[in-house]
Length: 94
Length: 166
Image 1: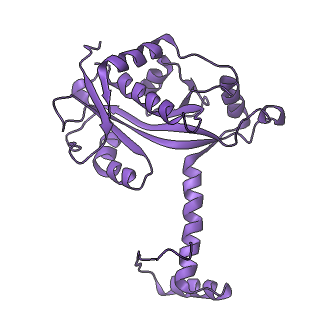
Image 2: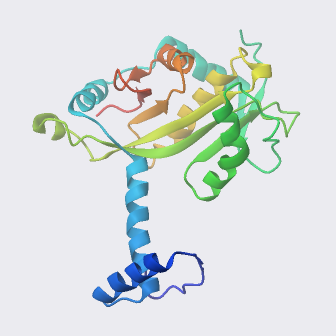
Image 3: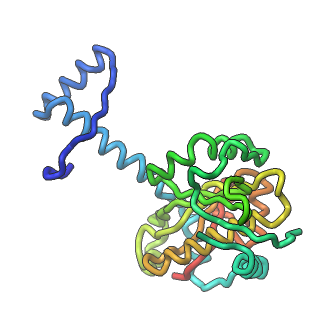
């Protein structure tokens, strides 16, 4: 987190005694407060989760297929070209 | 066949009646009812709905659009060298659905066309190389295949349409 932005938002959470003890131990190893330990761990995990969902990792075969398809310019097929023209006549896009 | 009735396609808003929408696939209805607004708020995806020009509340169909990066690190080095960027920016249509009462009127292809146009419009700033879709069933898959999408793998349900050549 950047230091100069006020941290005004709150998250309250309930947890079991043993989970709390575990987090307190881990935080003390890193010389962090419990809140800053929870926050930094959750942020790292959130980044990872978002990355996993937004990134599509292709296998070698898929990557090759994908690459080949994009290596040459492929025009849209007739049906799609027609649909795009119909869109221009028919749809008001806001 | 399409009777070519006019349509408005716009971002999902509070004026739209989400609970009346029914496309025949429960998960797509539930998504619109319960999750779509939150996803928009959290910027996980953008949601666009089609409606008749004179009926601001009734949702005829919708699609979701989000960004996606394609990880091509599995490519052999020779091909990988030709990539302009890595990972490659793409767009994802996660869901696309048309209300049961108005199916077979060409609304699905207008939603698809709208998604392509919006993606190409953004692509002036950041090159977007492909549009990826998740097909929910076989019918959806053949719908996308008709418009020139290719299967990404034979196992999965993902297809893609090249938008910009490398």
